[in-house]
Image: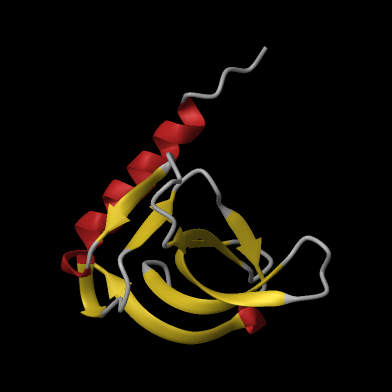
Length: 109
């Protein structure tokens, strides 16, 4: 499951509506939920990096997408609707390094 890309029901903060969005699963927690990084097609997001089909071991993206490393979230597995791809192991390592770098740059006072 880690390294897989799924379409998932991502609810708005109001909890009333949702959109189906592609997400990259980076970890399962002890509660059986998944920790994920979302994708966007918005090129204006300064904290996103271009994600190409060359990064995939299997599956494909139909639109140019960007991975938003600084927007991780947790989701119940029952909100995953469809597996669409799996990323290559070396790309997963790069994504996790970027995420750890993002966490490391936070200053605690």
